[in-house]
Amino acid sequence: MKQKTISRSAKCAGVGIHTGAKAGLSFKPAAIGTGIRFVRTDIKGKPSIPAVIDNVNSINRGTVLGNGEVKVHTVEHVLAAISGLGIDNLLIELDGVEVPAADGSSSIFVKLLDQAGIVEQDAPRKVAVLTEPFSYEENGIQFLLLPNKTLKISFHIEYPNPIVGCQFDSLEINADTFREYIAGARTFAFFEDVEQLKKEGLIKGGSLDNAVVIDGDKILNSEPLRSPKELVRHKILDLLGDLYLLGVPLRAHIISSKSGHPSNINLVRKLREQLNKSNSAIKLIPGGAPAEKSGIQVESTGSMTMGINQILERMPHRYPFLMVDRILEFEPGKRVVGIKNVTINEHFFQGHFPGHPIMPGVLIVEAMGQAGGLLMMKSVPEPENKVVYFMSLDKIKFRRPVFPGDQLRMVLEMLKFRHRICKMKGCGYVGDDLVAEAEMTAMVVDRDTIPDNEGR
Ligand SMILES: [Zn+2]
Image 1 (tube, rainbow, N blue to C red):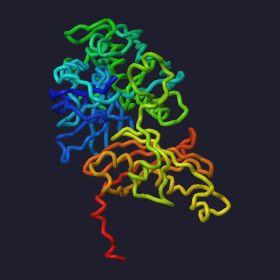
Image 2: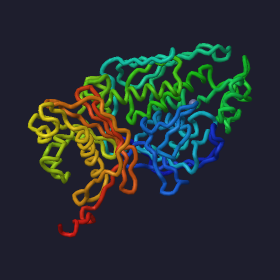
Image 3: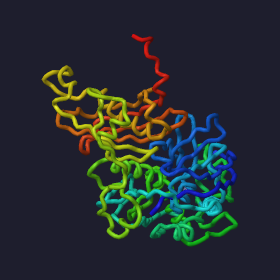
Image 4: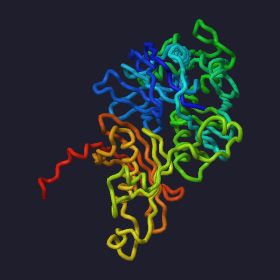
């Protein structure tokens, strides 16, 4: 199966349900490997925010992405449409702070994406599959995920209200079922909650045009429910949108009981952690036919790997400071996984706590930075004439020491990249143990602009 984008742009405009702010939204085609990105065209420099879990800023009744000051509110319904239609690469330009609510469902986005023409790109799609069951529970909310060849969602909701009551639905999710059953399911709210939500500064743009409002045993809207299962189907829609923040389509049977945005987001964080580990319940595979035929046993072979000679070609560092031995996975513009084998012969063990050999923490960060540098180099023209400088390091945590004999695995994800400046999240693992993490900002610089210190 190939990656997909759209062939031309399409746009709409409207009011956001929570902020009440009006915004225009346009879908634009994006290159292979771009992923889904929001672009705030009303802000100087048009900053972009990749739709990935690390950029989730808050989850009060809707999912908000943020990168510093730059935010996008209520991303879940548009992401559900993108996920449901199987689109991999897309820019969502927004000239305001919140995605238009339209009728409270994903219908308008499906219509726009269809108008824009969904097209295949010349690169294989990569999907995440489960290799074993995975469960997650919080406050009476339960998720059970089972290995499955396709994405299937079974959802149960229960509210002490006669209109909603107990509802259950279970569906294979593909473009056809999404269009037919899920896309049109609207947001719902209870009349008695409306005052409280308004007090919290939410639903400023809420109205009977963009949400089903339930008052006891009545629906206040003139349009009746679109199906007896509309409400549980909207919960499936929300889950689909939140799940796409994994950054890669997931194939699994997800059984959810009573989940909402906060628990959906926590689930996606757990899944993302699993995806970053080596022997975990979830792994990346090339999407399409092989997975469909043989189910879940396909190993991860789809990503680009690099041996030491390719690393030496691309990186300026040499002994004793080259700290990447091999690249195991490489997704341009997105993610890199590299390893550094730590042996007792490392030069730094001679002087750093002699007799007590542990790898200096700053060098763990350096190793992550070097792997991240490779990721950045792949995203700029003429990488052979460039070097990468750190600009800032943030949220650094060292969780356990790294000893001789350990294999350090560096997992770097690109959070933002513009004007040669890149923000990345780095995690270092030994086996399944997280040993260090850091957020790093780095800049690509031309080699010939570096001052040579006046010949000294
Ligand atoms: Zn929703």
